[in-house]
Image 1 (tube, rainbow, N blue to C red):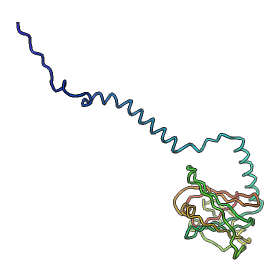
Image 2: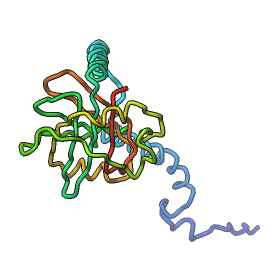
Image 3: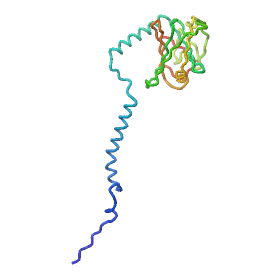
Image 4: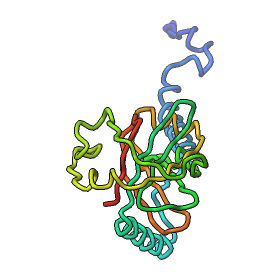
Length: 211
């Protein structure tokens, strides 16, 4: 009695395992999980979370101090006009205070690495000048601020004696001239005042008053 021949696929016996499809399909699931974990860890290390505060008491005390500085700016009647000039020059016209220097800080709304800081010094040639009437291209009326909110006290401060401060900072000038959303903060070095406003760039001339 003859034995029927066995049908064996010779090609399947000779191929190595990595040339088959199903082993790779089974390995794809754990490999994708490992790749996703590497991406998440790398993102967390490169872009750390800047919103978490570990010292709440210190931050609360700082908030109280800044609120007092805002109230001081209102009491002094501080009015500022900041202008970006060619060559990276930032100019500030200050009325209501006469500090030795003024610090200007630009804070990005989401990325702390983009925050910038510049010290503005008074001009030696003309420490006090009459503020000229400046029309900003973003403002249709001098009684309306850059966000369309009525500001009736703006014209009342135009006639005050102002002191001009200047500072050279190409990075800040570039940021103010490029599209973006920032917080612009000005502080006096001698009197504890502060003005701060959320701005949308580009801007060339901007008036900031305490609120």
